[in-house]
View 1: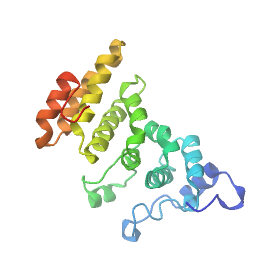
View 2: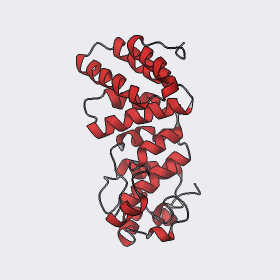
View 3: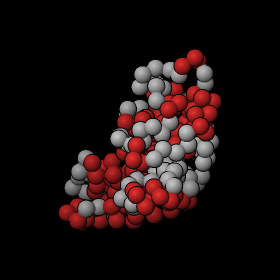
Amino acid sequence: MRGAMLGGMKIPTIAVTLCLAVPFVAFGQVHEKYEGWCYGLQNASSPDLLDFLNAVVPDEWNARCVTWAIHELGTEHYEPAIPALVRLLDFRLPLTPAEEVFRGTSQAVFPAEEALEMIGKKALPEVLSAIEADSTSAVARGNALAVWMEIYREHDEQPKGVGRLKQEETKVSDGAIKQRLRWAVQKALTYCNPPEKSACEQAARTGNSEQVP
């Protein structure tokens, strides 16, 4: 990113103000992903974008600026943003009804999920904490598991992802956390590609597989 906001104005104030001024941009004008979604943040640095996410409460007026910030932090692989991105795992991409028809169902609707996948393995500890935490919403927990398995898939290590969850389930003593991890292990099997299905099932039973040292 290219520096702090003009005039020393605080990120949340100027971003939300500009979101109110231009809350929606026609998709015909978009040349790159989320281009024009938040003019107030386009020259913000990664630390400024993180400050914005930490300060803002997403709503219909600032949702596009929140989406912009999430996407940019993921693109920059900005690791300090991982906790904020995990907190926003149930934040939905804001689309008008017309845009939903235009984009279809193939596009990601949870920007933080995509951003964490772009950051990669450094996000895994926080993602695991989200899977385990009682405070995590059902949507965010499901998205956290999707991120977990996608990161392992990108490294051709899906059985290892399942195995790590099983190892964590075996290790923890808290009954509620153990139950959430048991759910995660079984759900993770649905993400395994057919060639790795057998190794994933082994990992789900034992915590080990051909790809888990």
